[in-house]
Figure 1 (tube, rainbow, N blue to C red):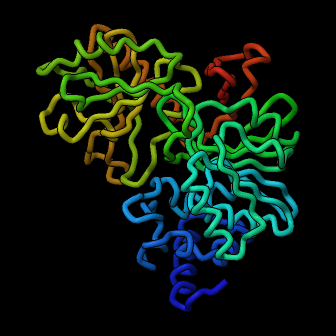
Figure 2: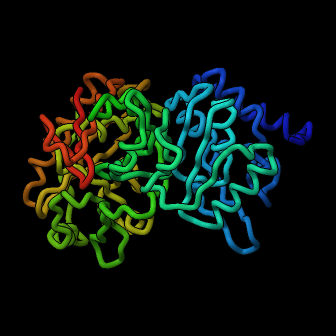
Length: 398
């Protein structure tokens, strides 16, 4: 494949920047230094093709491909590390996108096989054309609903999804070898994490998970969104199995209502992540949802500012809620921000205390990652606290 010296320079610089932030396996590094990302992003300036960010690209004039088609390169590297594809593997990718990720997979499996599927005919056509043009004709591209997988080329050593998945389809179980690995951006309780799952008989067992963000796959409707005020500037995102009374919540969040605020004992530094609070809470609490507060609501001072306005964990119970907050305090220079809770409604104090308990549990071991176990719903209820979905049961244990 033809590569210009400038493209080579920019590609290597991008990989060097990723390596400065995180460990990347040698084979993934080599693949990312080899595949010309710019060739998969038509109409984009060369420099923009080699930045560590998601981008919108255009295939046909005036018809942009979805944003998820060009994922953040550092996230691509992270998920390929989780996947652990090896030479000779048979790999299925759900979500063809630009074709770039399939080209990377082709490099990793060498003489193995790569199949990529996408529900959008234009995206599948673009991926096919670009893979051919860059020398990756051996990749199989199929236009199909990704929830169906590709049984004609199964069984697979590895399956990777590059779209957000709310429930793990039974069809994927039948196409993954025992001992094989599934990597996917799994969505539950309003959050998304890239989870690496290894099949052990009738169970999928996690071997790591990292925070990420992907647009949801087409065809799964288990996630709900509801406005909590007339301006639609405050929203709650929840799963279909959660009993969320949106009308009651809306009546609680009336203008002029004052939040009950409660501090935790946990402080964080400016760059220190605290998303583990959300993750840990979901391991035992079915009231965890996502709160979204727009800039308009903040400007109007409708609610106390959440920790991250567009996506903060919130406990919801009837007509009451409590969500995560961050307050700056100068008493601890190394960790000047205190985590806490803001709550509204008749049960405000109880919910705030429960959220503080989740924060403090996270604070006792901030780097802890739970073990996720997934079983098919058809096998019956799993032991422990279960997050139930139509096709799978999920448990998290610390």
